[in-house]
Amino acid sequence: MRLVTFRRLGQTRIGLLLGEKVIDLNLAYRTCLESAGERIDPVGVDRTVPAEMADFLAGGAKTIAAARRVLAFLERWMDDTAQVPYAQAGESCFPLEEVELISPVPRPGKIICIGLNYPGAVDAPRPEYPVIFLKAASSVVGSGGTVYLPRLSRQVFYEAELAVVIGSRAKHLAAGKALSCVAGYTMANDLGARDLENRTSQWTTGKLMDTFCPLGPSLVTADELHRTNDLTMTTRINGKTVQLGNTREMIFDVPFLVSYVSELTTLEPGDVILTGSPKLMNDEPAPVVYLKHGDVVEVEIGGLGILRNPVADEPMERG
Image (cartoon, rainbow, N blue to C red):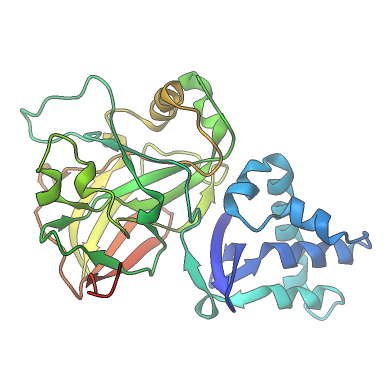
């Protein structure tokens, strides 16, 4: 399944992405219950399919089962839209252009980033342990959201990354069981201001800016993405490829990273782990191309879709 968070008519909702349509999960679930003749308790429905993605993920098997039930119901509706109450399902189905997709997880509790997780130059040392830094929840935007170039920097750089979304609380997980807490995967663009990063030995200064963590467009559930170790990763600026790699190049793979991070901190539903970004392109260092006002940057990974963001100078009135 492809889960999304979207805005429509001033409301933020969670839904399913089906091709060029977005399904309001809560509304569709109500219609699904109605079609089966089950009593509808609005409070009960809202608990089963809550409005916040982190709460939905925390619901575990119960909420995922509800979403799968909605999918099966919609398949029947698509086979015969004239049936009642199946025709009512259309009231929860919106064309993609009528909604605004935001980040699948709009406010992650923790954004844990892994640095230096792909090979660099031939003589570059390989880290003995994963290099970790954090981003702020305020840095998150969705696909289509504008990336703002901060006034302090003229060296804003992009990094395509596979993002792991946590679905259940976990601590001290062995690598062999690490994926048990993973709800699914999305794409991230780990933007950074290189000139600010280089001010100190810590990178966070250039990493925590507003809009510097685009996520999306959807959260692909773990059962749909069976392998994370062979996904092509591409970044394009204005249609030109500027970064190309594959997740098989990771120094520390996804199960190891989830296990390692769970030893350091308790993982909770809605937390996001960014797994690092390729440094080489066709076995050579990737070109350094800094973003500028008017650019459009795209990240594409495997079958996860395209994360697309326009770039603009930070307006003077923002604050």
